[in-house]
Image (cartoon, rainbow, N blue to C red; front, side):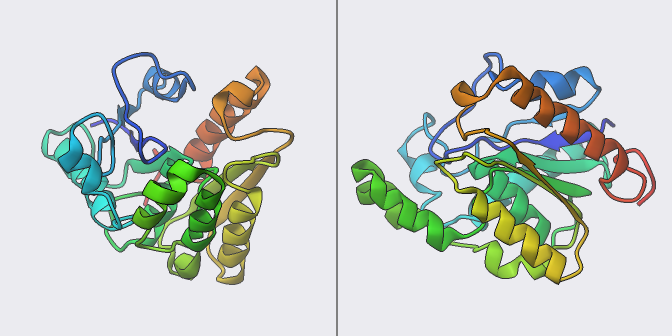
Length: 231
């Protein structure tokens, strides 16, 4: 078995394909010996209306079940092993990482959230700035409010965010980190100066910082002794 990253895409109205990951996350960690799974969970588009609409109102619930099923699938095939699996995501994927830390499934050693929106109420309000999102996506955002349950986090968390993010405000991650601190939960928090939300707005050094800091966290702080240490 390999150390394994479950990497859900953003959106969540989006999808992954077999092209090069423009952020470099998949290739970077595969080159380090990780198995990387990009689950096309309920709410992903491009696979038909049934799968797409099945994510409505299921944030942190059935959408999350699909990611967990991916972990179990990898374990059944001896690709992944208990105690060596991490949830990592950015934007909606960052929200999924926060939810993975809260849900009592015991599948993940730690979780890494980039620009994650833990506060669903704030996210719903943000969709009013765009007519399409206001009409179509806003009603679908329901489910687990990760911020409200931050004190229930069961695994260590690494949270990072750009301080110029105009899509998911940095205060989302700041509030989640503060809640973890108040509850005495293990976490690391990083703000990347001048970084926005979209990849096209990031300087190469900002992408490099994400990759290097995530790898460092996996090796040293993801559970006792890092991803390859003891439990």
